[in-house]
Image (tube, rainbow, N blue to C red):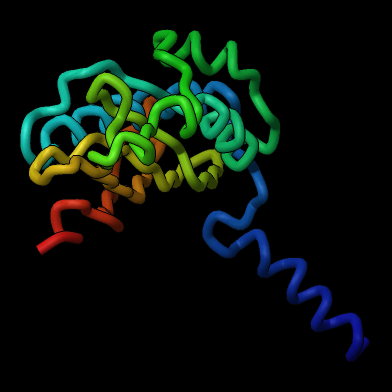
Length: 180
């Protein structure tokens, strides 16, 4: 009985710990939150752009959203289905959207057409909470040659009835504070 008691106590206690039920968010939950993340990150990048405003197109690393779907739901959703739910943004990998001039002698780095690029770095989800660490990159035009402006946010969404709402926001990296 002495050996059985700790195992029994653990089996009873685990479900009582907050968020440890093991119930993952559904793909519908992911599809509800992903557009909110993209909208938030694009608006933040454009509003906090150092120098001239980033007025180019929105590029999205859809493969990062595909990987995030696995972290949130436990299953990997297709890039096509995610793209459709995000309004079919321009698909671009890091190599396609983030450019650097190494050959002309002028140098500099920029987002293609001075747009905004968004990539979802880390993801976790339960039926009540979805956490995302997301990066936006735009072009910092304060200096010559230009450089990238990265902003990284940790966003937490909470389910309120049938809707998902943005709760906590934590700015992890702000390009405006990197250079002095």
